[in-house]
Length: 225
Image (cartoon, rainbow, N blue to C red; front, side):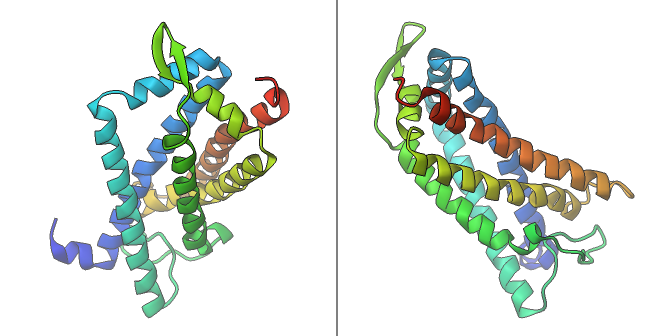
């Protein structure tokens, strides 16, 4: 990958798109794993133990951190280049022409991205580096993440913050997915309206999947454990 490519407008946008798609894949997997909480505490704790044990976990963490920092870096470069020239869309066509018809989501991507970054940091502090309770899963000693979930989401403030962050995530993902695919030239001719709708559904469904557990805990389990 040449330095000229990374310095070009299309190069920056494509790198932002690739790193963004990597995180789109991650949030889907993370959301599905979180839903194991509804199966039961042991299933959820076993899932948590499975993905955090072994050296592979640290490699995955390093990869996620690298793609996140890369996404932020290239997004910043694109924003600065756009401001220096004129406002253009997040996506470009395969011919390199800027797309028009910006939506609220596209116009606020920098702001939604910033809030999501704040959420990621607070989320890591709460769960990744939060209290460690001992539990078991399949007779193996594991971290009791299920107990921590109940403890955190019994707080109305925590649930509200989580719900707001997921609403913002829905808008960010709904624009980012189709825009990234468009930037990389993966959308066949005439299919953009369908991809836009699918991307909107993607953002909404992923965010709803994430917010299920906090709402379930707050309304169904609060004070029960």
